[in-house]
Length: 386
Ligand SMILES: *Cc1c(COP(=O)(O)O)cnc(C)c1O
Image (cartoon, rainbow, N blue to C red):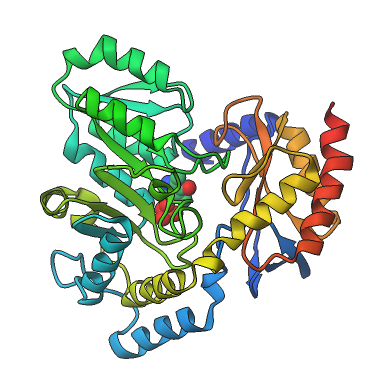
């Protein structure tokens, strides 16, 4: 065996012992909410396809037409020959949706955050990050090499404290948070974060991967609060409620121009296939025309929390915290035996001791199934825990 194989084998064994080894399971989507695993058809409560737009006839048709007209791949980076005119249409639409002057589309949400953060902060600056912020915000901070202080989850007082003590020592400062937290489903207090950002001259970056399309009348988490927010960097993904693939950032003209000039993950990575862009535009058409449809995933989540006896959902994501990683896996297996796909989320995706079931709701989930799932979880998981 080569030494790299010895390393990998030993590392895997040690992760396995801690129930932290991960494996990919073949899973074929089968319509709106069903998946096929090992020949068995099960009902998925684990997709981020909140509006089932990955399967929508108009969205699929837009992608197929774009492939027929323009081919499959982009052929090059956007700065070379990969900047299909569809990008301009999509960016105009995104900017309008978010109420900014401009937007820039990236290859993915992960690439967006990784590319954007190092443009605005560097070695002598400061980042303040919510402790539960998504992995790609941390990657962006690491790439930037910027001193990063962690504030307690959604804790405005702690953030203020950290800024009070540290802001003066740094030239520029960035506050980074999810708008809707991906593993907890709660919302960031964006209006309060905006006020603090203004007071300390820090720039707020909000990651709305789980907000666009499903909260704030489909406009996302910056529109989900009673007051208007003024967030200079509004990032998100086209891969969840939008049903396609890719990431975006909405901001002022000059900010977007600087991003297009400097973001390494934009410059040195191939542009999105035209089909993905066309599909995203078709999805935005549907979301903008049918705000009632965009409201469904949250309503479904609230039906679930009501029947499960959990706090009322504020997004389509509902966590059921179990604690122990092995117990979370066992709960997930039990639900799979019942015909439901509900994945267990373990460290390091979530903090040690907070392994959980992460349940997501989509517009197409029937209430009867939601209530059945809630009853199983209430009687066999929540009660079993206490
Ligand atoms: C999924 C997710 C991303 C990454 O987006 P992709 O387009 O899938 O790369 C970024 N941030 C959050 C909060 C996410 O949940």
